[in-house]
Image (cartoon, rainbow, N blue to C red; front, side):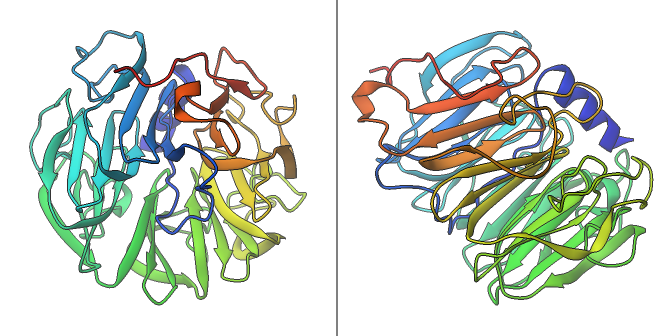
Length: 389
């Protein structure tokens, strides 16, 4: 199954789905020279406060966007992408998307399922593919775009009904041109096998796989069309099979699979195959005073209004647990890990954060990373120099 394939690749090479912060994030602190960061594991992408973009790490599919050859299986140092007016970045397993201040969408990386501009190709430098883009999400085998008129479009492979076009299989009827899904959308995020979208009226909607009730209705295999999950939503995140939701008053709720405690309510249990045990299709209250959330695999993360990072769940699941939660490899309740957070992103077993008060741009990239198969397993400042000239 695709879900198991994702887990396998994420844990094998320390890559996973990127969960993007909402464009209305309160976590991008002005005290940090970094505006936004993203990661797909084994590296990252950062937008400086002036809009310039740098990338580092593995670029097996050309996803760093600086011309590295495909298939090198090599970590590369910090590099300047040449884009100078970016405001949003989304990194997935094989591709990176950047949206600029003038609403242009650029992409670099693999397009094995036609998910880059409706063609099967792999640009190794950032290539302009669409205008009038408000928000973009790099999925595993699809791309999701919110246009400036707030319409949501998607193209790529229709696995688990994630394109909301009535198709569910990976290997047939790949959509090569953008397909309109719905109106009045602010942001979108792809989980392991499902999709979430926040609309302009602050309602959260979802579709795709609902085996564990992550879409807020009684468990079923596929929800083919968008359904409303919750009102009064400020922020949200999609994990492998669980959903995190922050309401306008800063209260965090979770629903879906709770096999490894990723719902954060102090419980855990069930199976990897079906709704059972501690899973919940009804929202479970987790904590208050939350600003932003992220989820990937069986790992959950939240940053509070006080800019403290909390982690819970089981990084890496049962395949390769990673001790990144203050030295522990699992927690069923939110655990305080690091303070002074600017922006943050996670994969199934890795954390990447920028910190406030980290110094000026000339002092180097103020980004901390920990996790992955090889560690380190505690917050460690990346040993990379300042932006090259």
